[in-house]
Length: 196
Image (cartoon, rainbow, N blue to C red; front, side, top):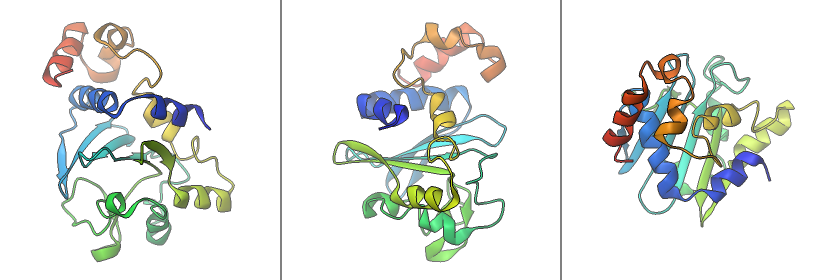
């Protein structure tokens, strides 16, 4: 198993949500609603983002978009491949990111029932374990790509410091001025605003 999957599986969902809320506040990414689920995201202003889709039932979906990834399917308008990337994701989660309207929380490819949230990487939590989307794995196999590196999952999820301490002190030591335009007091304020 990969380091990022190990770290996801070793981190309680409540802790993942806490980290997601803090980074959402720091990156000024508003929370959204999607079919009864919450979407808590992070973006860096350069086209990279991660979004946690949280139905509140103990399952979760995390979508990342690395704008430089070979799996940024939006660039070539590969709507069929984007739809395939969600193959094997449990239907209750899959249905949340398919058939999206134009004004949804996500950039989409295609329209109507096949309108899929744009993502270069997809992972999900179901039955207490995190897995990579089988559709993502198949696409990477066909194209000779690494499902964690080339999808942007490693890069985009590294922002959450999985497997490491996640605190005001730690984030304040990671050049918050350059990352988010705030000082230590701003980091502390973000933790308070996020209820973390």
